[in-house]
Image 1 (cartoon, rainbow, N blue to C red):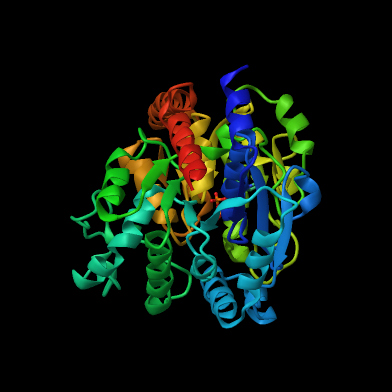
Image 2: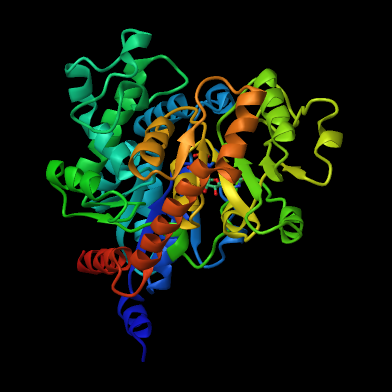
Length: 460
Ligand code: UDP
């Protein structure tokens, strides 16, 4: 029997529960981790909120349980992640519903006994409910190690005067405790309410401190120093770098909240290798109509083939792409616009040669995994920090600073796709991809991390 068969038999009597935060960038890695654990023979139950509810039909191998989340309709409709996280936790803490659901899941003797619950770091309310029932929790951090290390340092950053920034001029001050970050690279949100952010980050740190261990969706060679920093600060049984999870999981699709437009794959098949710029700003970022128009004309004027994801709600206050007049004609045969892409497949396609991204952590990691250089246009949260690492640490891309403007955009696209600076970034991205391949090989750091994780789960 192969090693996999033995391991599957050993663990078939155990179950893990997973509870992702209901946003795309958090759902994807959690379900990928669930898939990896399922592949090691563990049964999986997915708990999910009614807000952004998951579709059980897409994952017949898992059991699904819906949990009332109590997010008020107006907060849910705002689409603002920080207020939604706070409202969801407050409602869950005020009601016995989560505890009741967990208790009934644990009591279900038609299923193998639950060893532990994997939660998103933003679900402290769920951590507390599990703890009250004696169920150990483990946290999956869906951001980078640098980002979580910054969460842990947040009180210090306030204490040492970096936050909240007092003036524009302070934005480029280096944070000497967390090199190579500058004040502008620290966690930021669309709300200017630092108290609210501080609360969310403190709660995320508490969730991890209260848990048995931490898994980070990164890999050792990418963030060695940042992982060490976390390990020094946390007193938990393990801090494991087990990413990029999408490369370990057998399924690359199936957790999209939006329907993927697969017509782009045939379109890509017809393009010249390495010629297409893929453009996407993730699941949450939004902009105004003027910014969209500048991006559209920047793409048109660049002369480069492109595939651009324009979500229906990308432009604030509109319901549809709202592309400028004449744009379709200007890019006919050279550009394609779709509402949502099978992104991981797109990035792995031979025709794609670069990624213009908002640097959400998943997008960043997915780009690195395919050896693609990036144009970075961070919007909020940890995206500025990811951009800083892309540019100053890994050298696999550069930032497009300031408001989008068509001439600046066209030049940046040329630089990435056809000039020396882009070539240097591409070369470094290819080198990083080799490190991804080796961490995923037998004996590689991320595979070993999964082995250790499975051992920990079995020991509970
Ligand atoms: N994604 C996708 N199709 C798209 C755009 C994004 O499947 O058209 C996926 C992408 O592969 C990534 C996730 O959505 O896994 C976005 O997560 P990320 O952390 O990059 O950004 P967020 O949406 O959280 O800002």
